[in-house]
Each structure stands twice: as C-alpha cells, then as structure tokens.
Amino acid sequence: MNRISSQPAARLTLVRPAPRPGTDGRRRPGPPALVAVAHGSRDPRALSTVHALLDRVRALRPELPVHLGHIELNEPLLTDTLARLDATDTADAVLVPLLLSRGYHVRRDIPETAAAARVRTRVAAPLGPHPLLVDALHARLTEAGWRAPRTDAERRTSAVVLAAAGSRDPDAAVDTGRTARLLSARLGVPVVPAYATTSAPTVPLAIKALTARGRHHVAVASYFTAPGRFATESAAAAPGPAAAPLGPHEAMARLVLHRYDQAAATPARTTAHLASA
Image (cartoon, rainbow, N blue to C red):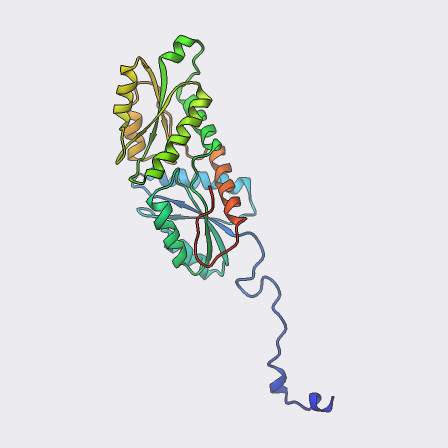
C-alpha cells in the first residue's frame, strides 16, 4: 500500500476512465446511416424527385439518418458524402443504390468507392427486382390511364412495354426480365422488356413487334427511378398510356428501407461488400 500511495502523481494520470458511449466519436449509439446512391442526371427534375423520395423515407423512419450521394453529374457526389460522414465521426453507413438492376455501377463503382472510404460500409442490393417495384409500376400505369382488360378479346390485344435504361451487363437484363414477368402476372397481359440504350430491343422496336402480333393496345411502363432523357424518350414512343417514372411512390420508399435493413443485418466490414438480393 505504501508503494502504491507513494507513486508520483504523474504516473497515476496514465490511468484514464473508459469513455462513455457516444463521447468518443466512432462509438456513438444508433443505427448506421443510410446513404442513398443515385446515378445523377442533367435533368433538374431528377434531383428534386430523388429528394422527394428520401423525404418519404425519412417520414417512414424519422430516427434514421438519411443522406444522398451521386455516382456522377449531380452533387453531392458519393465520395463527398462519405467524406462528410467521416468528418462528423459517423462510424457506419449502409449504401443503398437507387438503381433497379445489377450492372457496372452496382458491381464496381459503388463498392470500390465504399471500400476507399474511412467510414465502415455495407452495400445493399439494387432495388430490383422486387414485388414492391411491381406495386409502384402498377400504380404509375393506373395513374397514366391503364385499365385492366375486362374480356378475353381485350387481353389478346393488350400488352405493356417495360422501358428500362439498358446495360452491357447481362445480369441487368436478367433482373429486368424478372420484373417484367412479375408485372405480367399482376396485369394479366404480356410485358416485354425494352431499352432506351445499349441493349435490345429498343422501346419503339418492341412496340412495333407487339403491334405486328395483334397487340394494338400497348402501354409503356417507366422502369426509371426519376425523370430524365431516357424516360422522356421512352414515354414519347408510347402509342397508348405512358407511365411516369417510379419516383417518390410509397412502395419505393418502403423498398429503400427494406434493402437498408437487409444490408444492416449483415456483419460490418471495413471494406464494402454487396448484400444479398
């Protein structure tokens, strides 16, 4: 006891109390931040639409910190958003791509950006395919004037083109095809995937092929998160109802949170990984 009490005070100051949770920066309690990752667009309507979607996400889960980062074209860029989170001592983030299928951005761009960040990250699966997307697609078609065929004759002459952006990644076409099949089951008519760029068939060619087979009542479902050039061009090709992009539909907000929850349930890593779809 004498030896302990006789130690210089300077030696005793080396022993510090453990920091309280929430006072040491990266040990703050609470859920990981949700970082929605949008592609970006030169169309100013796209940014306002994404903000409206995220406002709906916040309304569904007010306690969750929600941020936005873009791959390109709009600010804030994803790299800047992750840097700001690090500067505010946010320890963990879940990146949710506001993209509707797999592709280069989901496979490479987003995971690589996440892996380079100082914030611990998880990368969620893209939004599609998923039944909640079909809910939103159906609602947008109905808003545009689509009516379910009431007779066999109407069903034989009706169809829908699912207009998507297109990708060189074959898995993107697989995902879009799955969504088309889900939507077809909901509508009771054929749904043909078509693309605004890169992939085939194009939206006009898909419409032409359906018309040649006697499907004269063709609507276009917009498989785009927000307005932009591709969505506008696809809608212009429609001979019948042309649905608006999915935008801030409630099913979209619920799907963003579903993907977040899936990824948040996986172990945190210091390098990004893609959560299971």
